[in-house]
Amino acid sequence: MSSLLIFCRDCAKQVPSSQTKSGLCLDCQVRRSVADLRDEHARLWRKRERYRAQNANANQIARQISRVEDRIGQRIKELVSNEREAVDYLRRELESARGQRYTIKK
Ligand SMILES: [Zn+2]
Image 1 (tube, rainbow, N blue to C red):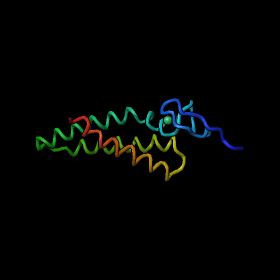
Image 2: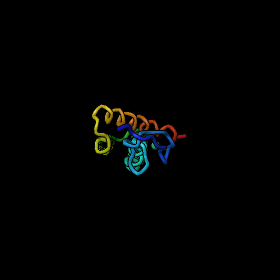
Image 3: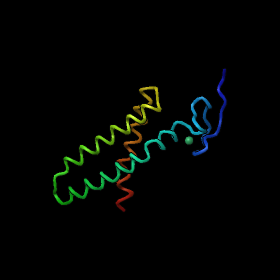
Image 4: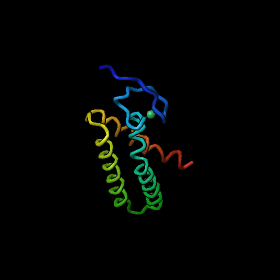
């Protein structure tokens, strides 16, 4: 049976209904499910930059950042069953999470 196309109610992209949940496409499901962790990541990242600017030891914060990144990865895996896709999503989330600091700094 061919899958029906519907519009994601968040980004309005047209996606097969089989890939949606509560009217959301997979991109939006992932983005929403990791939103709080992204905020946490951004907070830690800024903290680490402050520490580094003061030449303080930021190893502890680096460990916290990698734990948050692991949790982001776990949440993505819960949503995305295909492992290769899950890795792509994780890479994209981390790239944008790490890029966030530039917009915050301005
Ligand atoms: Zn969407």
